[in-house]
Length: 178
Image (cartoon, rainbow, N blue to C red):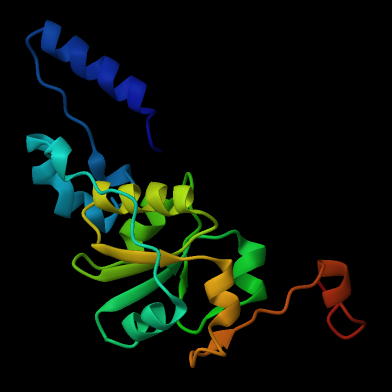
């Protein structure tokens, strides 16, 4: 069973005070996200403050479509689940902005991949850009908003929709064996 980090730290400090060594079975720990290994050096050395990214460029729908086709760029949709399900560019990855963005982006995005974000606002695009930078992802080439996504097909791109329904509506007599 995993031990709480506080317990591990308390035992480590006690072992140091006693002049002994602490042995801990790390096999119980969860695997670390891929970006941890990549960022280890930067985390110890620190990142220069002046390198922190500024607000990404707002791209036109056509620019975003062209980037999505260049083979180097990944579209990340940071909007909420309902907006993503309603309509998103075909191939866009759903990684919502906020608390878990770092974990999911670090797990599924390869370092060095150019990124275009779909964001609710310029502020949200900046927050996700900084989160990506903090774990060594990017560069973020720019962002688009809901208006650009609504124009995606008319500008020559393809979109996907995910049908949603309530669980009660999804269960029919044939499937109601749950």
